[in-house]
Image 1 (tube, helix red, strand yellow):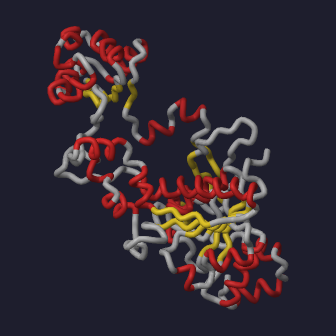
Image 2 (cartoon, one colour):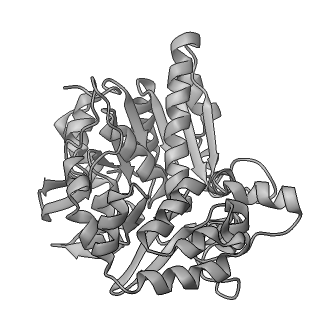
Length: 394
């Protein structure tokens, strides 16, 4: 069954993570993605380990379902081929530093002249405007500058990044949202537009209650480990064989927890009678929860808490996540047959649509795998394609 973006053609100039995550999302939703890569080396992430039979597992994890066309955009013939692709494309996505595409004569101002319906998405560290616009950026840099590292980790003495590259990934997610919004708007206006997404902007957008807490109190939030600044108990608690997470979002759940762990005295303690007072006294409360729950195993408490309808969950390793029955039931772990690497496992799409479902249709491409197919579709002859190859245009 065709996906919801069936018929949408995307020219993908992105590399590494933020841009490729965006275009992978569009591919899962049915768009045709033509990934333009540098001849010989391709996307930088093809060099990132681990490698399976010479193919990067990192690259394969975020480039599934795409077609690979190698193209030297610095060569005149390479730019001619690119412009031919753009004429009937719906979307161009790039994540170069601002100014790079303009130097090539391929920026939005140039491309929209030959295709006024084109959606042009530029994803970068700091965006197309502002004093930092020309700076290079990576996930670690943005997590620090965006404030996330100031509220993550055990305490203020140990700046800590989030375990996944969340600045890159959210830039990819917001880029996809921007592209879809522009495509919808085009159905009314007939015109394309530019989508400008900055990783730093995305970090500020997801700071959640940290901004509200600062503007309300004038005090900078600091890391508090696994506790929540506004809800208690909402944290990791020690058991006899590890830790589990507990989330009591209201007083009724708190009273139920006290009953389950057989600590009725905590329920009547004035220090813990309301959510606000529990937050204030969490440094005193947590050791008591640890003491009570350390008497039994994680499995024991998770069963008891589930029976009592108190939100709780394990702290899974990656291997445990990949074997979790709920994850498997939702088709969130798929196996694809790669032409070189063999069978590879990748996450499924989290977007579940009832009538036009997202689908992971193909593995990530080998570098230049679709050169002949794409160029032939543009009208180039076998002899011309061989000429491009001989001149290192592709």
